[in-house]
Image (tube, rainbow, N blue to C red; front, side, top):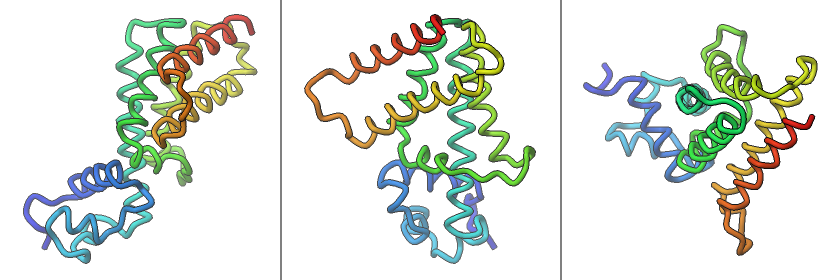
Length: 187
């Protein structure tokens, strides 16, 4: 019988929090069980092992990021929407590096898979940013990949402490957003 107050959502949220604190690569079921005050075998009542736990964390992370992006874009267009999306993604990745790391290699089984549905939420928000730019529909996928890659790369490097130069990181990020805006407007 599962411990009172412990359910799959509690387990996944605790695992996501722990991954953010110690890094996804360091997350083990033993550490999670200790955090939750249970024995490791108890976790198998809620998840089917570490791979399933990572998948569930990815769904949580993409849902949270999708919601944050959607909310940040309300009433915005053009560079304002681009900047809002960029800052939202950056803030999410730097605040939640462990849970975000689970989203990097996804393999949804079909379009109804919760992982695919959560991923679409993120991509729909990024696509919404592009609607006010004159991007040819045949280039939409390329523009989405560009946007996602640049924002992802910057945020992941920042979260990992990869920017060691003396130049202010916020100034570099503002430069990136300006560069993207100019490129999208002049395409």
